[in-house]
Length: 236
Length: 121
Image 1 (cartoon, each protein chain N blue to C red):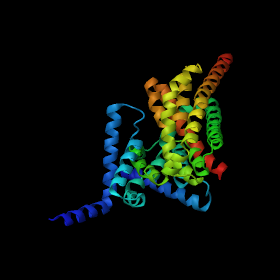
Image 2 (image 1 turned 90 degrees about the vertical axis):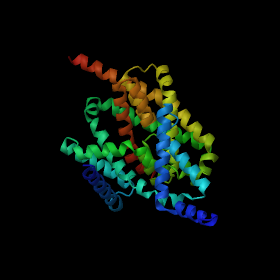
Image 3 (image 1 turned 30 degrees about the vertical axis):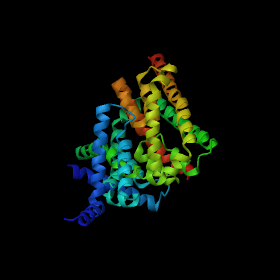
Image 4 (image 1 turned 135 degrees about the vertical axis):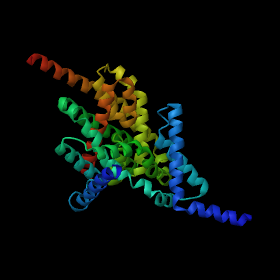
């Protein structure tokens, strides 16, 4: 084959619907391997995978709409996965019943305080409305935050970045801030990790103890559902 | 097994989007689906095995699924970069308050509940 034909083959490969799927799968495998080898919380697989995908799309000159169309067979599963979040929530029902009022009071006041403080500070410093709407659900797990952000006039992808930043910063500062406040009860530490740093905080909480991890997972699930149910109603 | 569980999840999501379109435009379909599933689990008082397996599989690979929508940042990176100082300050300062606050409040409330129980004994 001469040079011209090779160029055609390359162009047709880029246009193949499976190109986006392959790109996403490979980016995820690389990101996961990097995360596991390094053990660094900052290297979240979603973040690194996303950067690899965006970098490749730029290099190959493909725009996001084309990529999204090809990768829709992966993205379509986000919906069922969001529905599936009810399963881990249900597993915590026994703990929730035991400490119902402490959990509910902490979740509601902590959740409201977090949203209000973030919005007040960011808007005082002049952030755009669409950025603010993407910031407000940042304490929820990513699929919920993305759906809620879109619902109230923000951008799903911005919300994804904010969720990751919150998780990483919250987990990095968490042990020091909780120690400073004299919080040593594992359930209280866990709940705070879950409310403030969702899945990334839960991974850190599990390193402290099983009870701490369980309450972090519980805080994350419950806060996710509270944000999903009430933020669109209040902001909308 | 996996397909049986997936059928549950897909049907509930669809049901959620029907409710979203007809009755509750404020809540996204998958979130209504999640609440419906939680209700089903409460009524059944347990998690059916196929559902448990599919949920575990999907949630394990959630980061893979989320790469696709997250890559949309390439169309909105201007908004992110323009407001970066405001975003950074909002995120960090609010966490400096809420992390110790949530931990302290929960610890206080747990100890209070425990003291009350001791008094009752």
